[in-house]
Length: 205
Image 1 (cartoon, one colour):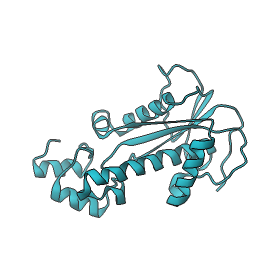
Image 2 (cartoon, one colour):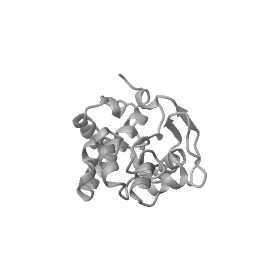
Image 3 (cartoon, one colour):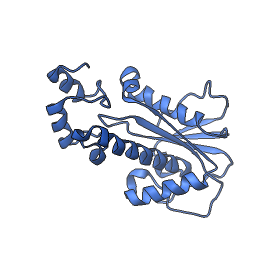
Image 4 (cartoon, one colour):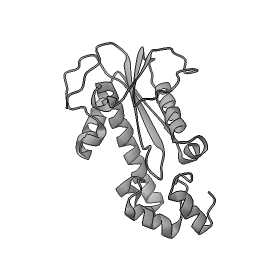
């Protein structure tokens, strides 16, 4: 599927990865691509094989006009709820950009407020934007590859849970380990079945 490349300068695409898992942060990326570049292959990160995503992520980091990452951890997700934590991660990603965007496109039907970020720009929420707009697709790739790498490192710290395999999503294997061992600090305690596992094992919820 082809995506539309930016036709204006300093258009930032924003997307997130990790809203649905039981563990780990929600991660957002903001990417400003050059206008009408000469390379192809960008798409919604979920439609790309892992090696393709990794190669594209390296190229985005190398050739984008600017990019930034932001995240909200499990404790913030539990305190705020997943929607507000996602919007917070998006604000942090935009704040991490080394140059201010002149226009912002966000995947989905909700967009973060730009208040307090130090710049003003029109913000456009686009449902399915990660498969339609190149800058959003690039952001989806950076967010997913960074989060996957984070969860692979988390696997070394909490090897019982298999984070390197399922990245925190609620697979049957993950839920079985959760029921047997309870939650670790990366788990989102307001999410089921984490809440029930904490109650069953006497862990704080």
